[in-house]
Each structure stands twice: as structure tokens, then as C-alpha cells.
Picture 1: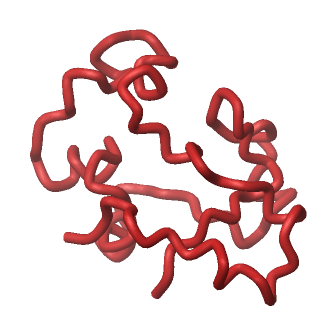
Picture 2 (picture 1 turned 90 degrees about the vertical axis):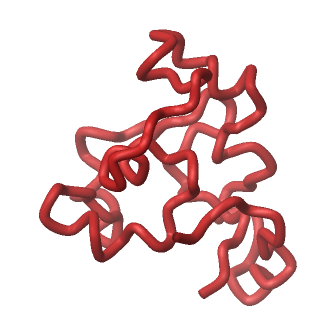
Length: 109
């Protein structure tokens, strides 16, 4: 499995978050919905600082996490935004995504 910097068209690359969150599963059928039932099977590809991952593994959230700070921009200010360095998937042909492999992403169990 490779992690690439090609982000979904609906990811807001400035503020983070899905721009069509309420309709994401309808507009993008391959979008994954994380639930308590399926999270364990998806944990391996979530970044180490992902709140879903940390809660599932019964670990503490980092002090900069928006769920603790109440400030959505705190992840950006701390330099941990998942969208940093990402590009819209439509900007790069899929056959060139190998050029976007994320070598330094903090992921894995």
C-alpha cells in the first residue's frame, strides 16, 4: 500500500475537511465511512495522530488536537494537518500518482 498526496476533489486543501460531508457517500461511493464496527479493519492506514485511531487504541489525543483545543485550526498551527502538501486528485493524472508517494507520512500500527 502506498500513501499519495493526491487528495479527494472534495477535500478543502486550505482549511481541511470535506466540502460535501453530508453528501460524501452519495457523491463519492468509494468514500469510506468509519464506524465502530469497521474501524479495526481500517486502523493500519490511519495516521498515528488520527483521533479515530487514538480513541480506538485507547490512547490520549495530542494537546494540539482540535477535540481538546476547541479550535479547528490548532492542527494546522501545530503543523500536523493531513492535507498539508496534498494536491487535488484532478490536478495530476492517476498514472502519475507515483510521483506523489508520501514517503514521510506518520502511519501504521
